[in-house]
Image 1 (cartoon, protein in one colour):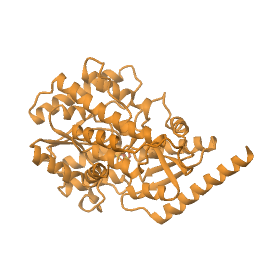
Image 2: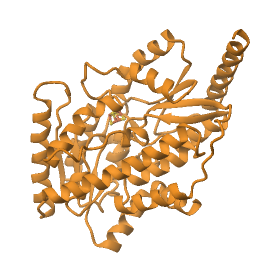
Image 3: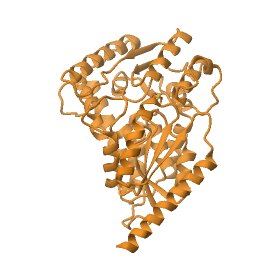
Image 4: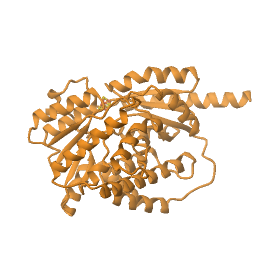
Length: 389
Ligand code: SF4
């Protein structure tokens, strides 16, 4: 089991080295995409390796002057990676938009590296309009045509259907792991889950699926009830992985992270593409439109789904006793949503703690004090309820 987890950890910790080695070994192209809504199945169907561009932990240097300092760490990091020429191994970068800061990053990348092939396709942000599906289908068809031209290939329906089934299997296997963790059947730390999901964003999906099957077969399952540590749901980080040290710190303070809606987590695998829909592009567009039902995204306009209400239900369903919100500093969509989340959790008397994270560093001892207090508060409340019952 450790060997498989080590492979996931290596790819997650050194994603670009992994991609470069894969390109060299297989002689394939690699196409970078940005979070959160790009249907990477389309790239897979061309035979190229889809790679989600990751935030890197390095200090921001030459790219710093190209972006406002009050932009999120993810966008500043990717601009820095481009200006530092760290993404030259990618044969193209494809965007679909999701927030103003990412749009700005696309422009800065285009201007500072005109030789980099960058394509931008704007998926409709409003998900419940009568024309939302039709608009998404149109955008995805343009995206496919663009990709065919960039890579000099033809994307067939058959190849797309195959890629959809490979990606669905990957999502299902990771969701199986999530379900086993929720019920306490397996003990995987949150940082190990992050390695599993993050490596899926940069590894060849068939290889990742084979490793996941091997991992699941090797895991020791338990039917004993979950220990009485404090169960926590972690929410936030819409585009990049929280530093694993933060997840470890939370779990070292007597909490167990049993579920999450992180992008480098459950959000990434929440929604399958319906293989029963005849036209694979329509199937991909439909999955985009209905993804919000499974895990709401504050960058999408959807009057029928409230993230805060969904979070209250998700915390309850997984048996968590509290919510930790990891809020990326200067993430505008999350800043807009957070006051409603806070109000909903206070109204319903469900404990919650917000931790702001920042690319340039987080005061870990401050976080430790906050989390320890939060965990103790939940334990005291739990003991008081037991006495009252
Ligand atoms: S959604 Fe938030 S974290 Fe993602 S690019 Fe936009 S501002 Fe940054």
